[in-house]
Length: 242
Image (cartoon, rainbow, N blue to C red; front, side, top):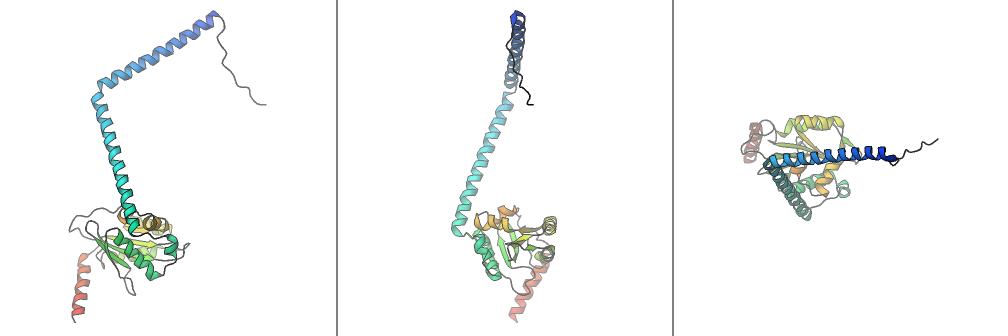
C-alpha cells in the first residue's frame, strides 16, 4: 500500500497560534542577525573582497580573450590546411608522411619528410624557433589496428642521439596499446592516436597546443646527445664532398 503523505495542518486554537508565531519570530530574528553579521563582515573586509572581485574579473577577461584568440588561430590554420580522417585513412604510407609534414608547416614549423629505408625511426623532422627540433614517426595503419610499445622504444632510442630532437612523436590513424601510451608518457615520447589526429588535422588545434609542448630556452640540449647528431651531419657533409 502506498504511504499517505503527511500534510502540515494549520494551527488550531489560541495556544497553537501563539506558539507558531513565536517560532516564526525567532526564525526571522536569526535571519536578520545573520544578515547583519554578513554585512558587518563585508564592511570590515571590503578591501579584500574588492581585490578578489577584481582578480576574478581580470582572470575571466584573460580567459575569454585567450579562448577567442585560440579560436581565431584555429580558423586561420584550417583555412590553410584541413585534412579529414576519412581522407587520411585513404592515404598510402608515403602520402601520410607528407601530410604530417604539411600539418607541421601549417602550425609554424619548418619541416621535411625524411622517411625511407634505414630512416632510424624518423619520417618527418621539423624545427620551430621557440619549440626546438621535432621528430615524427608515422604509423599509417588500419583504423582498428594498434601501435605497440616496440615503436616507442625505437623512437626513444634514436630521436635525441641520432636526430638531435627536442620532441619525439609517434603518429597513427589507428590507436595505441595501453602499455605503449603508458611507456611513452613515462619516457617523454608523445603519441597522437586517431582522436588526437582528428583534433590536429580536422579541427585546427596546433600541435604544440595539442601536446602542450613547452617553449625552450635558446641553446637548450635535446633528447640525448647532440654531439652524435652533429657528428652524423658532419659525416654527411664529408661524404658528399667526396
